[in-house]
Image (tube, rainbow, N blue to C red):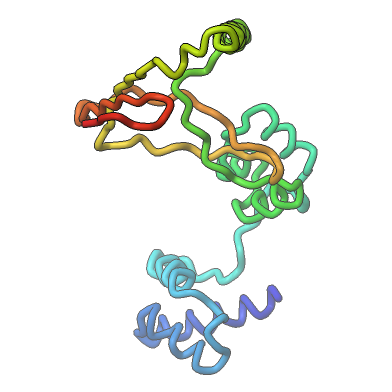
Length: 203
């Protein structure tokens, strides 16, 4: 495979010296070897190298680059930071993005957008909410007061929404939750009132 790459680079060098550009040289290659031989970007990179005076068609040696990635190390990095990117993993382990992605996929991980929630509640907050709901349900059993209640609420709807981030999760796990960003200046107030039958009014 490496000999084929060098063969194609020798051909690129030949056409460079003939005065052709990268696109023209690639056209000559694909006419003979097919479209999958080299990309335009690869040909342009080699022509840039030739123009700098470097006519070595062999790959530069990669010192310290591991042959295989350690899946346990990748898994540990993800467990430590679920929002780590493939680029960050690759930089730490000297791996390409595609190699990191393949290993993450092999570990059963997929990238999902975090879920917006109004606030990240503490354990105490959650217990207090459950207690309040339980108390109201018991009261309703003796006095059906819920049917007499008209509820109102309002919400700022922003024009410019902040993009959610992605994090790695198992396919059968829910996505990670994250607190919403601060409200933007461009917004409109939405107000609504309803009872047990449905919405009464809104604007």
